[in-house]
Amino acid sequence: MFQNKIVRRALSTVFTLFLISLISFLVIQLPPGDVVSTYVKQQEIIAGSRLPAETIEYLRERYGFGEPMYLQYLKWVGGFFRGDFGFSIIYDGAEVADIVGRRIGMTFLLVILALILSWGMAIPLGIYAATHKNRFADYLLSNVALFGLSIPDFLMAVIYLFVAIFLLDSNYVGGLFSEGFVDAPWSLARFWDFLQHLAVPLFILAIGGMAGTYRIMRANLLDLLDQQFVETARAKGLKERTVIYKHAARIALNPLISRLGMQLPVLLNGTIIISIVLDLPTLGPPFYRALIAQDMYLAGTVLMILAVTLLIGNIIADILLAISDPRVRDG
Image 1 (cartoon, one colour):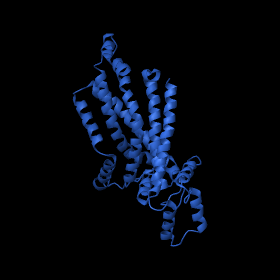
Image 2 (spheres, helix red, strand yellow; image 1 turned 120 degrees about the vertical axis):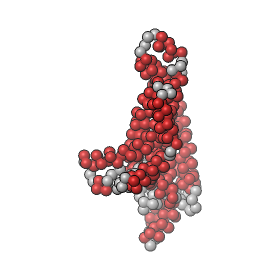
Image 3 (cartoon, one colour; image 1 turned 90 degrees about the vertical axis):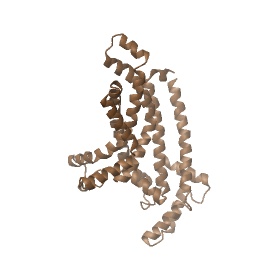
Image 4 (cartoon, helix red, strand yellow; image 1 turned 60 degrees about the vertical axis):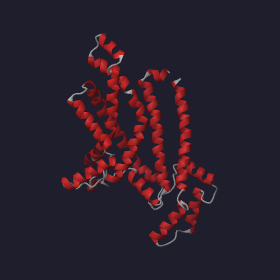
């Protein structure tokens, strides 16, 4: 039964991806003219000379400009299976696949680490707050969570830069490496420098995700602690720790697992935004530049990555929820 649900979800995912790719393609076509014309004009301004006619003709033929719209779409989508996502105007005609490939690993590393850190803090803190309701620690944690929810990621990054530069006289101006380690080969010294720079964006990303997850965990557990099955477990003489962690907290996790599908793209969006502020080597800065310069192949590809992350996150959440809750698996 559950396998059939996964198959249906996979088929709906394929259809959703088709719709998203169609919308992304239409976004690419929105600016006046076409990407090739814009690229040719840009090269004339920068280099002071026109591109060879053979190069222009090659680009038009490669992406189907001048052909019917549906053929252009098929050529663009067909390129995905070959790793051909088009070319970038702002990177002097470089392949979008190369630009994305150099930055996507660091992007998802930040997302995954932020997710692990936020859950690793939120779940035990939520359990502690629920079992110590209306005490000082509960009020303190709730206010910290409210702070994390109230301040956007980008604003927290700006505040950090202001404090670091103007109040602490730090030389830090962004990035994940010090100036001497940017292009250096990997070594223990470079790895340690990377970890020191990673702490700030990771904390900024994790605090927002932690706040929402903490509030849900606390509220769910408070509701469950008054349920009859919890009272029955206590009446059987089970230890309070066993009642909370084995019976109540396990069920309280289910809504968090369902939320996972939405949390992944939210963290990815947050990574992109704070990367613009802190100049991190992720997809953020190229995506921002692509939107400003109407570099639609690069912008459209990043939009597709965001959409795929959302869909994959939902599938992963469904699978984890079925593992956690037999009622979902057997229903």
